[in-house]
Amino acid sequence: MDTMNGLKRTHYCGTLNAENIGSEAVVCGWVQKQRDLGSLIFIDLRDRTGVVQLAFDENTDKEIFDKAFSVRSEYVLMAKGTVRERSSKNLEIPTGEIEIEVKDLRVLSVSETPPFEIAKADEVGDETKLKYRYLNLRNEKLTKNIIMRHNIARIAREYFYANDFLEIETPMMIKSTPEGARDYVVPSRIHNGKFYALPQSPQIYKQLLMVSGFDRYIQLARCFRDEDLRADRQPEFTQIDLEMSFVDTDDIMDMAEGFVRKLMKETIDVEIQSPLPRLTFADAMNKYGSDKPDTRFDMLIEDISDWADGTDFVVFKNAIENGGSVKAIVAKNAAATYTRKKIDKLTEQAKGIGAKGLAYIRWAEEEPNCSFAKFLKEGELQALLHKLNVQKGDCVFIVSDKTSLALSIMGALRLTVAKELNIIPENKWNFLWITEMPFFEYDEESGEWLAMHHPFTMPLDECIEYLDTDKANVRAKAFDLVLNGIELSSGSMRITNPELQNKMFSLLGMEKEEIDAKFGFLVESYKYASPPHGGMGIGLDRLAMLICGADSLRDVTAFPKVQNASELMSGAPSYIDSIQLTELGIALTENEE
Image 1 (cartoon, rainbow, N blue to C red):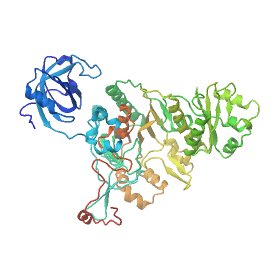
Image 2: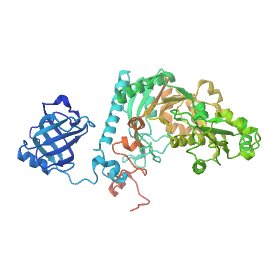
Image 3: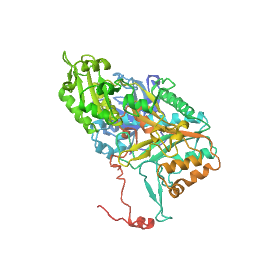
């Protein structure tokens, strides 16, 4: 194999263009393809910026020509030559007007035949791609995604630095405190029987930084949660974490909006208008059936309880009598798509998410077909069609149940129907704030009110009086940032009064001993005066996934985990030897070979 021997790279492959014609260039990279045409050899050389064509012909030194003949896919090369105009141009790539007439070629590393063709990685199964992740990352699509992720991080730092934020690192090994998901834990060798936890977020530490006087904190924080995986979740993730003192909710939201505008403009040249729209949690649920609504299309949820209560349809009436409601969505021009067979399938989907059934109206012929028509009196169907502005060609889907359940079911069906009708516009970026989040949620199984947020969230001032008497009426100074139906961020103002903080802990069923053990150091700090403060954490991974148009967080994460939280390339997690276990004071009760 050759050495570089004083030769230095002058250009990245993908940066060369017609302006470089006539100049000398030295490039390095991997062989994407070698094409032997007898008296001509072409090599597509690839690096992280793109591909450039290397050309070898009758004017090439024979030793260099023979070397070019010998190279294969994924060999690492260094080439020196003159940039010239291509006789056969490829305008589909940035370097397609030029090629390099090679004068010197070095083979720096040879490769075995890879298990899949890098350029066609999308055609390979996930298990193979993840096992050979270092090869998959050479694929242009994934390379661009990782670079985009880097640019998001760079822009975040630039923006928050320019707004007087200090980047401060918080510990990765902390005390285990309840944060809403299971902790990943780290055993201590020195303190046998005790464990650190990996942070689910830097929540307590960033609040202590506010108490310490660092009034604007930023960190690209690594967070860990031991929970089931899905397309938009990984066990370890990164959030653009911030906290601000001497502010209110509007200040924090305005700061985040400035970042969003800068980010979208500099990454994909999209102008985002501000202020961003805001919806209260209650309005979001009533209109969209979701606290992270996709507002790129209409099809809002309609309440038809008043109309339904006047009918003789017992299914509707029972729901209303039991304190529930009847909800509907109108799918415009859907009758052609939603045949009876398709509606049956949609009904099964509705039942799978908790519905007892799905009533419908399908207006495909001259007269609408209504699944519950025999229970309606004359004129009632027409009144409903008029109320909902239903036209020929439309479908109406109806669910009746406890209001919260009916709304969540309709919210899910709204998305399903929109996808099947293909009415969700692409390249549309609908950011949205959800405000006035409920402070508590009622758990039907336990009969108790549980916190919807971490225990440091401040209730709205006007709701504090209801903490003991009317938990359903307590709303939080909390807000979520949503983009196209994906939650990007949660934020809130924090409690800084030690008495109120202790009250919140007790309302959540925590005894004084437990409060002191888990949070005593935070409550203690408030005794020495804390500024009013609040903050949020913006999911960098999800943001990258959406901007890149990726289907999964795997596509924007260099070395992701799969659904069972393992990493196929390295084989993590793995067993550790008995010596390490002994040092940690740990005995395995069960060891699966």
